[in-house]
Image (tube, rainbow, N blue to C red; front, side):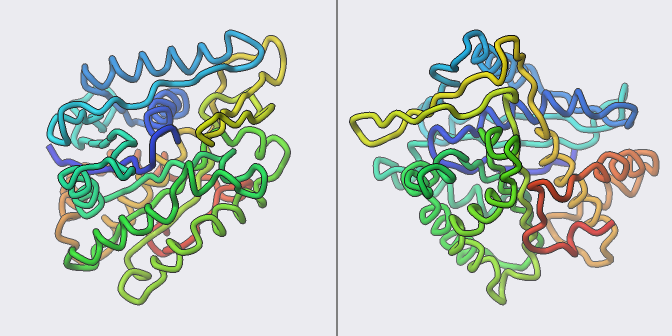
Length: 327
C-alpha cells in the first residue's frame, strides 16, 4: 500500500496529539456523502479514543482545568508510536496509508540526546507534509509574551534549516500552520490579528521558506483549528517556573464538545496531493500519488470533492505556494 509520511511538529504541550484526534473525529463528521473513508489501525484507534474522552471531559465543569496528557517518552526514538490511517473509498480496502509521527516534546529541549535530535531532523527530511501545532494563547496574549517559551519558533526554524541543508532535490512539501486553542480569537472575529501574529511570530521561518532554493517547492497554509469549541480563554496564571497555565471557560453552562474546522488540514493535504497528481513532472518520492489517483477515476473524484471544501478567509490563508493548491 502507498504511504504518505506526515509529521506533527511542535514542543511539549502545544497540542499535537489533541490536533490529530480532532482531525480524525471531524473528518468522520464532515465527509458526508463524499466517497472517502479514513480508518485508524487498532492501536491508533485506542489512543485517539482515550484522547477524545479527555477532550470531552474538559467541559465537565464550567472552567476547564488541566488538559490532555503529553506524549510520554518511551525507550528512544525507535520505540515511538505511529498513528496510522488507511484512506480510500467507503466500504473498500484502503489504498493509501497516512502515517502520522508524534514524539515527546522533550526532544525540543536541551535534554534531547544526539539520537533524538537526529530523529527529528530525519523526520522533517522524510515527511511529505508537516503540521506545525501552535499554542494560540501563548502567541496572542500579552503581546506574545509566552510565544518563544511555549512554541519555540526559533528552534522550529533551525530544525528546518538543519534538515533541508542536508537533503537533496527540490520536491514539493506542504507546511500546515495550525493554531489551536484559538476559540477566543475566532469568536471575537480576531482572525486577522491571529494571521498577523503567526506571520510575525514565525517571521524568520517564513523568510527561510522564501529563499531561492525553497520558494518554488514549499506550500504554506494557515488553518486555525478549534479542537474543543464552545470555550474561550478566561485567565492566565503564571507558575513558579515561568510556564503559564491557561484556564478556559465554557461559553454557556450547557455548552458541549463542539470542535470546528479540525478536518481542514486534511482537506488541504488532499488538495496538495491532487495538485501533485495533476502536475506533469515526476517527483521521486511523490510518484506513488500518480499510481494512487491515476488508477481509480472515482477515487480521484472523491478526493477532488472533499478537497474543494478547503476554507479561505476567516483566518484560513494560503501563505505561500498557491500554485501547489490550484485544482
